[in-house]
Length: 248
Image 1 (cartoon, rainbow, N blue to C red):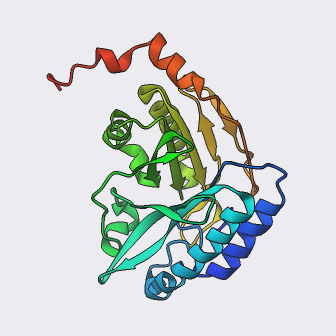
Image 2: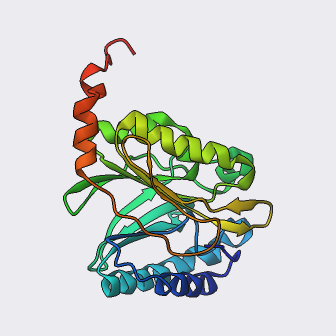
Image 3: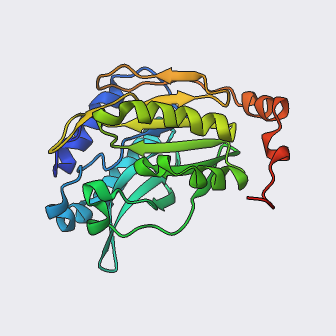
């Protein structure tokens, strides 16, 4: 989806329109990074105050669709702002709040947000799932840390700009291949204050093959993942057994 800077209610309405346009019955609904507000730094105090309302609305949507649902929002806590990936379960309960660890200094994110300090690994229908946000994708240590703890699916919300869309697609595929897991990533589309965003949301399987390549437009795109591919891939090429962590 595109994001209107600083307009949470308008973005919430857009999300619902796009979701309602789909006939899919998803287990997991993934939204972009800062999907309710964009990077409207000067209004973070006001925008953080809307986050509880947005989460209440997401809880209702999760219940209505019997789905997990998540994406990142501006969070305020103890005079600090965080770029926080919230995830709610089908009962509308918040089960995760992952604070983005790697802040993108090129956009001065590090001057406005406080970095998170904890990995986030949760369970969805018995599947171990790790959460990442945008720039986190460039740091293979984070994805590997999550998969070493058991993650078999990585969910990534992002506002990844168009000039580096090749990096986006390459890194998503690389994270899937090197960790022998599924990677599902939702990226913003449209024109922001300083950047164009290409969309190109995608899902890659543990072999690095695309399970979903979204069209470059707004919309609700869906795909089905085949969980036995994870075990199959890891047993065919036993990378985890062949690691030499005592050396590196």
